[in-house]
Length: 214
Image (tube, rainbow, N blue to C red; front, side):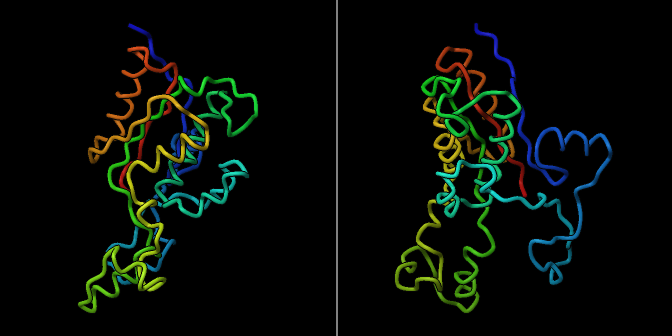
């Protein structure tokens, strides 16, 4: 049986972006729970949440890939940022950073636990408004209604496998890729799947992990 080790960590959380910053703030006892800032929560009984600090997704992808960030739901962005941090922490150089990567793409896998993709507030707001007025709204109405409903790319944003898709495309990983969808257990199962993939010899490296509910 092959021995499997962890070579790099990537974190994006309410108390910091990057494993180093996260750990420093955790040890310092910093709290990431505060009043919601991404939207006006005044109409809700609870107005507190743990929000990730502001970031620009363009800073975490190659310039050639920045156009594709327009079809990234926030969950996908978080996966891309965490993957970038893990690569840099490990010292591995993928196609995202150099024309001469020190990895073998065909032997590098990806397993991400995604569960359900949370839809951004501005994606289906109009569709929800139609529903509140008693009107039926679905993907069939996207074309006729245009901007008044969900935009045409929304299906590509909320598919659970899109986290792994973007990460593997950005870093040009061509080994075994899988998306684990099993609620809160998804992340742990993804790590276990990556472990077994390497252990049985189907890959030499794998990036893995997932997200907690937000």
